[in-house]
Image (cartoon, rainbow, N blue to C red):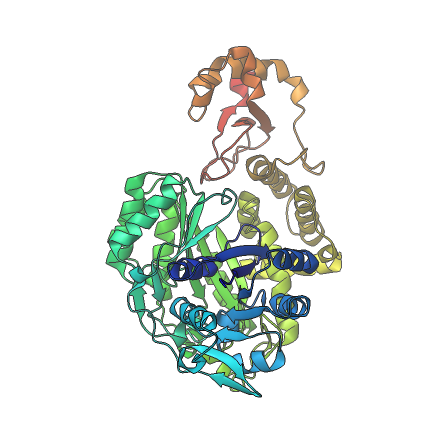
Length: 587
């Protein structure tokens, strides 16, 4: 009798999709029929997940396991086995590959574990199960029960040629609001001790013909974003340039996300990126630390001067989104060192600065050496660090608060001008500013409940008023008001402007403003979209705001200007269109 096989993924968010189960399905289904997939999220109700799994009535259930879903998956498997005792349950993925004996010992609902790279192993295992489970010991790369013992078979060699693995996507139906994951390589040339890629040596690549064919499939389907999971996309610089050139040649609206090493970038790479249309590429760059001793200890050899230079060049192009990463809790990184790392990276002015916390992953070198570093970590996933020789738990909690505030203000991208102005006038470095700001959030108990966007503007305004009232002049507070107003108009615009932001009384000049916009805006740069709109309709498409200061140049000037902006703006653009006109020209 043919067995029904269901491969399941529990993703961290709805917008995510699981690449692994699609690879497994495609690789196995040319030899085995009856394979389907199902995806859920960690936010789904467990009873709803179980109901779906049970109703699909599979004979064999496979689950892809990671730090963010392992606890939920083990609970699901326990209940599923009770509801369906005859079911065979297989686990695979990094969260079960490094201690399969313990997982099987503690979870009697699990039948098999696939260790490491899964395509060829799962195919052999499913074939063996279909054959009555004869010769299980001959299937490399699995763990299973044999009477009272746990058997771990010989490790399986990696698939030598990635082109042997079929393209994982059959169609793109249902991906309209999701990220599509893809890889052009497996492995990493580096040996970072916090990363599982360090456990597998060497890099394997898809052929350029295959990559071009796959990328064209994404573009033809109109996929919104393709996120490459290559550990270091540009480790082969020539190949990375060829891939980007091909994407540029297709001239599509699909966004491609790459994780790169900035110190490997050369002038040819930069020239290629410079040619890309706005929004086509985004780069994630793991800086992690700027402390040389820390980088040496985790075996991450990085030239930060070169990283900084190349990141600044990428940012200057104004056509890509740049995302930089730091990790708190690494060896030899105390608060003083981390403050320097934070400021070094913050001053590069990337679009996003992600402050992450060290996770002691199973199989990683840093976990093996944790006692040497005085590291304690949570015993439950994601095994985040609690303290080290250099950072106490109290200090890590402080960094958690800084991360929270950093995400809501800097990483939201909604306070760009205000934050830059505040760093100048308060005389504090970025880390000091966010440490003080997060302390204010604690003092006011703001962390206890979520805040609306307008709440965030008011909180920032109150923070500056409370802490700097005796330091800043009335002129500086007036300028702060104007920068808050500008940021809200450019990046906020949700509901009404916060009442705490002072505004010009537009009723005094309303008629003259309307007349000016109707007669002049169509010929203004950035307002070409008004060309075919009747004059009487123009005010439906544009908004305006009078500023008491001209803050749109390199330095603020005391004169009244009108900012005119499209009411609908392109959120994917690196530049928001608007025009400024001296008020005296209008009235």
